Amino acid sequence: MPELPEVETTARSLRPVLVGRRVTAVDGVDWPRMLPNTTEADLQASLVGEHVISVGRRGKYLLVEFDGETWAAFHRKMSGNLLLERATLPRERHTHLVLTLDDGNELRFVDARKFGRVYLFRSNVELNDFLSERLGPDSLNELDPAILASKLRGRKGRIKSLLLDQAFLAGVGNLYADEALWQARVHPLRTADSLTKAEVHRLAEAIKLVLVLGIERRGTSFSTYRDSDGTPGDNQDHLNVYGREGQPCARCGSTIRRIQLGQRSSHFCPRCQRAPKSPLPVGEVARQRG
Ligand SMILES: [Zn+2]
Image (cartoon, protein in one colour):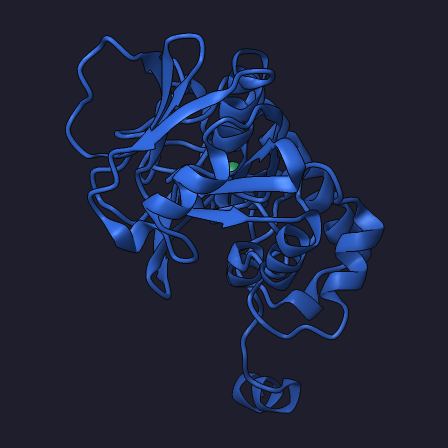
């Protein structure tokens, strides 16, 4: 699933080729449910003739701004890809939306699993209202140890689940959460309020580090993620825990383990990331020992 580094990589590669281009046509919608707040006709009326002003990202949303404060927001969910291809090339299967540009290229939204979504906004206020309802601070641009500490204060949930909650912190998904927790030596099942100040500091730094490295490596590609020119990233060759169950920890040599937390797998080193203490109250533990 594309997370922040994959979306950022796509935004960076699209920016120089999209900004300044004019949309000449919108078509290809074969799955109306991918447009929760708009329609193909609406997109045609709003975008055809308009220029691309900027290409950005917030959390896992890729944002394309057009003339007159009009925005398209793309969320790729499980398997969506945004490809920039020559209009003369045949469209591949599972292409669900195409923006034709005045330079002979097409921006194509391709998604085999159809969970991806495209939104249209007609003002900066509308866009910001939508995003601020759904997203906490951006984990690349807005996170630091003080912000993470204040977000965690009073929270009792498990740290891994909180990291996956986009309204808590935007951009991190399962893979980068596991990598950041390993980097910070924090067990995924720890509760938020059990983290020491030093651990919170390490975790904020670790989140930033794994995201920055992921972007430098142009994202992680297991099966479906591709950059806008169709090339996969290579971060998958540098992972420390995700998908490495049964292999040795790069730091201590212990065997990486995988546990199920909710619907998702968590990967961790049982030695570097100490399991939370017994959930029993202190008195209970003492009695058992005694
Ligand atoms: Zn280890």
